[in-house]
Image 1 (cartoon, rainbow, N blue to C red):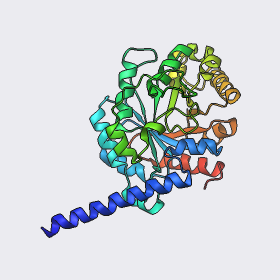
Image 2 (tube, rainbow, N blue to C red; image 1 turned 90 degrees about the vertical axis):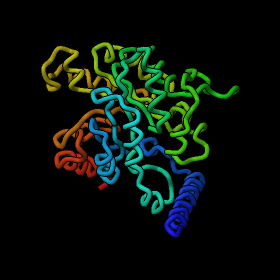
Image 3 (cartoon, one colour; image 1 turned 120 degrees about the horizontal axis):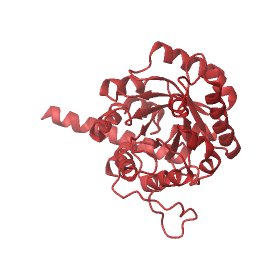
Image 4 (cartoon, rainbow, N blue to C red; image 1 turned 135 degrees about the vertical axis):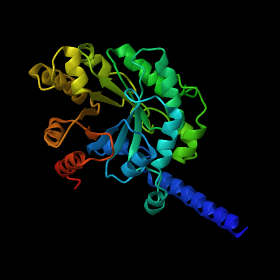
Length: 314
């Protein structure tokens, strides 16, 4: 009996703390999505690609010093229940209470497997958003129409009279797990794409990995609701017929995409390592990955340290 009462009391304290954190966040104007906050403050963000979205990896990454984690469900199994457990594992209750707000230190995103324009894209986007991720990386975006579909898949249909009715949202409404995971009372108003909705907390990120995507980058970058563009050098070099991303032609394509992003004020991302992170930041990339898989390796940790120093965040 005493054990049950103690458990109830601890649950009450946690719920009270979460409620206070939600209220404090609303009053202070703190964003739920840390990446958007960094973008608005013109600060770069650092992340990791993870193919191993296990509970142990989640606990390791939650305290890693990274800003975001891109959970790769394109090259790893598309397992929504496993994703739910991973997000639970990244929930640091002590940090929530100490910070006094609900913004995750490390923001989880997902790369879904459905290619741009495919029929499965909308369904897969809906599933991972309903679990509670803060945005999606859409692979194989080659043209404007595919980018528009990706943005629409990330949005709910808007309330009549909203100034940003288009692109019309396609997401079905059943966000119970996302509401619980975010911990905020106004999820439905916050679950929209930034920067189309200035108060939106979701990012629709397009993955450019083909010559077609590079050729159409001006039209892609101008799609309303697009929150970021991610360049995959290895995929891009393969699709261009080169054995290595080091080929000058591949770098030229990368700079073409980056130039369009800078022109349209779209955050641009790329994979980096210790030898390239500072160079990519100097070029204008606003978010980068510093490693992949298995938590934060020594190489990724070194790249993160160098990136933070270059960004003045050490």
